[in-house]
Amino acid sequence: MTGFEIWMDAINIVLQWQNLLLIFGITILGLIVGFLPGIGPLNAMPLIIPLTFGMSPGIALIVLGVLYNSTVYGGSISAILLNTPGTSASIATCFDGYPMSRKGRGGEAIGISMMSSFIGGIVGLGGLIFLSPLISEFALKFQPAEYFMIALLGLVLISKSAKGSMLKASISGAFGVLTSCVGMDIMTGQPRFTFGTHYLHGGIPFISLIIGLFAFSEVLFLIKQKEGTISEKGTLSGRIIDGLKEPFRHIKTLIRSALVGLGIGIIPGEGATVANVTAYIMEVKASKNPEAFGTGVPEGVIAPETSNNACVFGTLIPTLTIGIPGGGVSAIFLGGVMIHGLNPGLELFSRHKDVLYILFFGLVVSHILIFICGTILSRYIARVTIIPVNILVPPIIAIGVTSTYLMRNNIIDVVVTIISGLIGYFMRKNGYSLIPFLVGFILAPIAERSFFQALLIADGSYLTFILRPISGILFLSIILIVVLPPILKKVRTRKIKN
Image 1 (cartoon, one colour):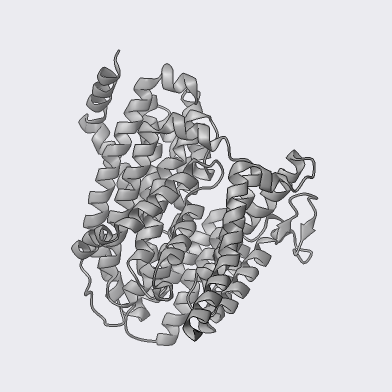
Image 2: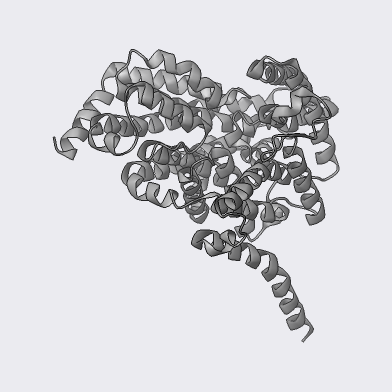
């Protein structure tokens, strides 16, 4: 069969009413799961895999792909409205999305998120469908030295990722790095900063940490507020339609963030969380008004939402082409592929093109459907920002506690969430941004692991970080970022004096 005939067969199969109904049902389920903090695709997908056993391989893969994509969509809604990222891939969306809700522009922020996510997903799908073999070959060039430099670049940019004092941003970032060190040492296997407790051997649970830092710290501010609503005006002034138009006023941001998300997605082991935060940092760095970020600017929502959805499909590229998952969720997706008797790589792209094309077209249909459903539902969900806080706070606490406990059925996780909430509250109250903290917490383990792996591969030679082409270019970029600003500042000062 020709490629055109395979595509037509795939389209006919996906457009059958029962398959469209299935895609619709999984879309709604994913949006709900994404909205609820702490569950996310990493916990939802293993539960849905057994339900795919009786399905054909193509439809089964569509179910898993749709669930992954729609949960990331849903996670942004709670991030914007409640300052609680439904999934870790929506962390950076809180930074400007929630301030927009506080200004009564929750509907507009959701519209921005929906359109940005849609465009980012289209770019990711384009990469997945048309560029998979080529991009996967480039991804293989990334080894621990390159991963270390990418993580180091993010850590260097910490002070630029938050408004206010650079010293406080750096302290916050250092605190995040220190917090990430809790657990077992990567090289020696010895416990560190565990204070003799077995619980901390696995490190601080990420979901407990982010629910505490964002949801519970915000609850404390709302309790202090006593009355009123999340929207300081008590009204919804921003319309969904205004938000849907806004991304097209920031084309450069869309392009830059989509490429960042796709690029990070194809690097095995990174994932949408890193893409979400990295795109936000890069947008702050590229902006002419970086001090405005964190106060509710549209670019602060466009960048992370475009990036994380491009990354969702980007992570499937190495998963399908070389059998190396691009993140935790894509690792589960890979398991679903193999459960149905398919082997990733050349065999999948040669002998099972029919299954692959069914998956591709199904993802295109589902992406459009997610956008439509999300936009319609968001019109009503945005009203949560005008509910009185004395009614809203108890459900937020209940959802946060329940989600944290159900993650591992461990009551200590709830204690960690409460402590994280108190820490987050005092940090925010005293001008220490949570953005650098999270960047440090996420990137430090990647940097540490990659650093030691690179040295082991290079027999202890530090030159590997400079002599490898991609790593060397990243190293040079870091040097320029550190050295150039002070030099340029001195040059400007001299010109003014002269």
